[in-house]
Image 1 (cartoon, rainbow, N blue to C red):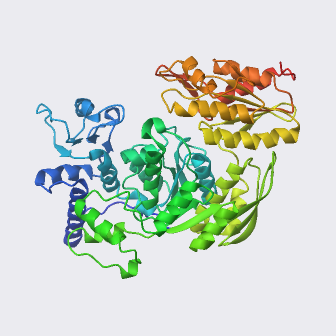
Image 2 (cartoon, rainbow, N blue to C red):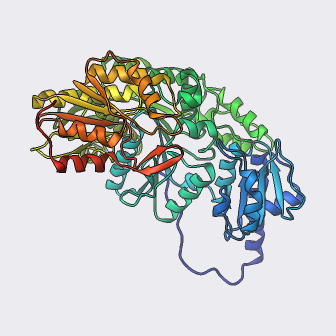
Length: 587
């Protein structure tokens, strides 16, 4: 694992020797030249002057004009909803000392008397810019990137927990917030924008972090939000239908996820061999079918990197290119080891056939009280006992275990730490006591996730001799095709379900619900549009032996309606309903 950059804490000497000054100037010139190559701009005096101010330790960079402070550089490019260039005037008014802006389809206002630098495709180069500004923080951290449709949040938190247990301080970036466990700061996106990502990494490094576990969304990969981050480990949880409102189809969605597994400088790729996409990725990687998905922005470095990646050889026998950018190309190339995990015979046989290291789990017991997994791996054998519920959680635990093993955590220590983890907020979060129905709040908002949670809870309810009730809806302004699918799944795997509102956003809740019930037969469901009323009804009509699943919103503390986020928490509403009591008899 990479070490943390050390700081002596002493004061700077008042005067540097001539040799030191010359060396510092040389290093700065090298950094500026590299940054010009990254941005694919000419190394003019004007460009050097602006970039010099960006690299000044006393200044910072910002993509939000409201966050600009005097002396900062404002980075402006079009986003999904707004164009940052529309706020250049506001950034200048707040004291920005320079602006770096997307050059396509925009003309600089000559009334803005401030140093500025036009850059093409700035959105995808912003990560490399931030990497230089913050002195490459990810290079000094052990970076774990987790992607997949479901399980990213739980897995990242469990990995961070185990690394912290081993004395390797680990920060988190993801859906539940950014920072260190117990002190996460709320975030609007699973993965922040590129400038913010590198800024956070620099903060965590300064605060003593040795590692970061980061959720990497498909949106982030498509939009270049993690460009410039030097991941050491990339992990896939699974791939199923989600975000088709953005990606359009499953092939495009998969292509976005695929990018993380051909990241430059990766050391390990951890794949779920029980997942069809995981098997596909492994086969492609071993056949050398990948091209760099996080290509260096400079065309020369990009070309050299692609040429080297095609040699399909080891680092020791690489044919070394010559010319400017050659060293950067060599640094960009890595040949990661593929590691598999899974619970099926097919997964194990696949790993054996390809000669890959593997973490295989045999599920010995799965009840409402937890899991018992016999682990057989390339690192040895162990038994993992967990209070988590569900086959999907067993799979996530095995994936987390594989990441920990390649992160130089011993098998026994890793298993011991993972045996202590609990569900994270809004992920199979259990409410109630032994005298009340079991109430589960879960973020399941895709067909695959809802089916897996319901199947896991059917075992819990059957063990208690009760029924399984489900409260769920679908988000507005999102993939409409999954609505009927989720309705069919909820009706099939629960004894009774209540279809309600989720985050309707700009849509009418009744229209969303109509799409859901279009996939249902009408035999075992009812419609209650108001979500709080639906939750109260389900709990009040549940018996002590019953299980109630409240699906879709998980940890969220709001309900978005017509562009306004109203305070709302499934957990709080459910707790209030439990406190009010339940009838014990279903109507």
